[in-house]
Length: 248
Image 1 (cartoon, rainbow, N blue to C red):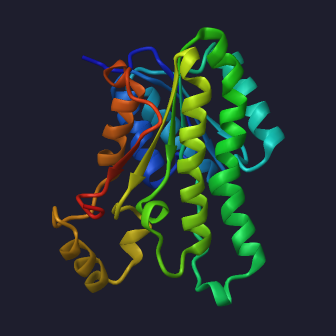
Image 2 (tube, rainbow, N blue to C red; image 1 turned 90 degrees about the vertical axis):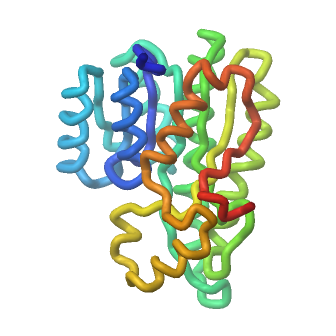
């Protein structure tokens, strides 16, 4: 059974890592996928074809989620092309790690703009169509770092913690319209980015996790499928920690 058959889904930042994993698992579950990317045109074209080969409609849009007007135009284009938006997954994000005493104002502002303001921009853009159809699921990608903090990541932690407060507020505002809003807080997820890390460091991280392994993009994608489907129809305003027990 395809849990998301014929649902139209927006995923920001989907050409690599967690976003790509979500796009693939959603297409496998029957969802039509509209996704954004910032610069990797080739990766977007490859992903588009891969998703279409699964028998769904898929289209990539080069769009800056941190730009308010660009986000509005992107959602308007998706509405024209797909007809509706059933699910929004705010996944776009970056890191600019440094100890606070060495962190530049620019690095703080950029992380807040891409990680947090983008969530406001896209959510604001989908509210009207979702209210009109009186249904929708918004899923915001936070992080365990947003829940517990992390040295050297004050900007990232602030952006991801901000997402949690935003999620709860949106859930309270839109619940009466049958629009749900939840957050996912991934733990240590193994992607192309973590593959560049020192192997011994990665082994130490795995040892500290109760399940003794890093997560995969599919682990996050499966939680997203649950929150996007009718299986979670009575769940809103929640944060699901998908972290192998890190925060236990």
